[in-house]
Length: 71
Image 1 (cartoon, helix red, strand yellow):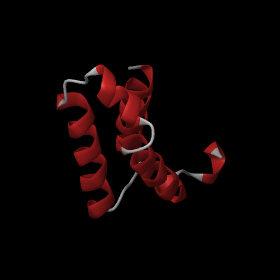
Image 2 (image 1 turned 90 degrees about the vertical axis):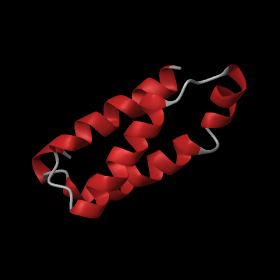
Image 3 (image 1 turned 180 degrees about the horizontal axis):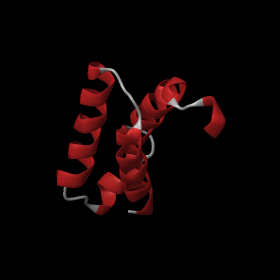
C-alpha cells in the first residue's frame, strides 16, 4: 500500500505545476484510479509492474514542467 500512497502523493504534488490540459487530465485520471480503488493483496502485487509503471513514466514525462530551480 505504501507504493500506492507514494504515487498518490506525487500526483497530488504535480497539481502545483502548470501542466497543459491533457497532462492535467491524465494526472487527475491516475489519481482517481488510485484513490477510488479498493486494493486487494494480489492487485497490490501486480501494481508495480502495471499501473505504477504507467504512472512513473507519466511523472517522468512531466518533469519538463518542474522549474529549473527545483532540479
